[in-house]
Image 1: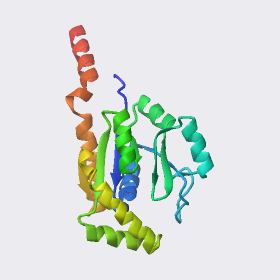
Image 2: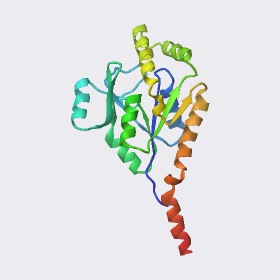
Image 3: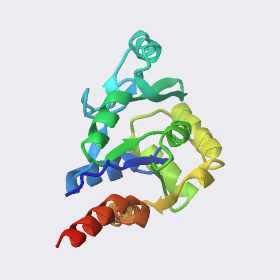
Length: 206
């Protein structure tokens, strides 16, 4: 059987929309590889180095930038975030589908480098729900919440660049919808050309 290159699935969303929980559910339920981003922000309660993020000092992060260690990087709400290059390339080469959970500007940078990447944006049903979820996390003070809402106002003007927008109202349904999108994309003809060519060759040999 012909081995195909894995797909790159880029998932973004407003802070508080639950994209992290959706990604966690996808990785637990389906055979996706999760690219762990690097960040200079401090870990939240329960977050582990190497699982939630690679937590770096600013100096460590700048060193990786200098050595072209990131596919993309950005400053988001006064902290740096970056996507390690080597892991993604290795996993896709092995035929594994890789999920990136990154913010909007980073996602657009990735799309410029990987034209066939699938861009999915996760949102709440409305702005009031978004604010409620941000406050309900209990991990940030009011000024930080205001900053994240202000950032959402900027992000909403860029969502038209995404391929799909999926509402995270009921978690399990959202997870299934994201997975269905990926399956649909993978089954498009242009992604099955090598398989069809192989079958054509095999039929001629029968």
